[in-house]
Image 1 (cartoon, one colour):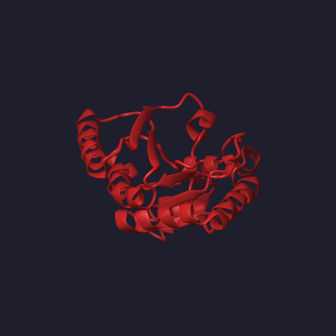
Image 2 (cartoon, helix red, strand yellow):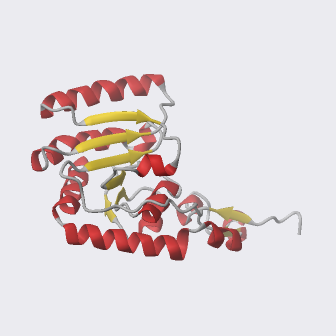
Image 3 (cartoon, one colour):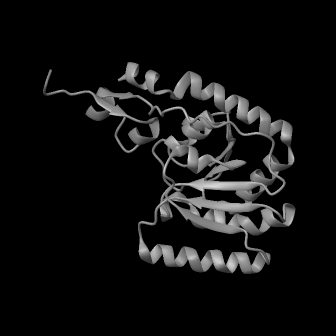
Length: 220
């Protein structure tokens, strides 16, 4: 028995590189992560909606894709602001991001983009957000999305990796790398308060049923 350990994966997407008939798949069980509850519940959207991305400033996280979506969103919502929350891990990529962000802001004619660095707590990260965007190009299973559901922040996410497994029908999915589709879904959610409220309620139910730490511990 010790020679045949169980394999625990945090999403079905993590198992895709392995052969269906191979040892890893035969021994594998998917146990999705659980997160502590974020005690923060969003009210009506602000007059100047804040669209946030929480994660490392890294190519895998789709930072550039969200920046490319900014001009179209600003055309529809001139008061919108984009907040990037997370640590910088690659100086060269950070320089490219800053240059691109400056070019986008200049194109829009407003200071609509801010980089705040890593937040001290999940509550601090989500405070003031009207929408969370998870535009990753690669993702195993996003804890940030689970936290957003808990906090009552609606979610727009790419179809990369395990994101669709986590988001399901409780958020809005767009094709990874397609900044035009990303801009369109952001605008759609911001324009439709009824849709936004349904997403908040569905996300909260999803957290209570699927993403709590207690559920995770029991599954492990």
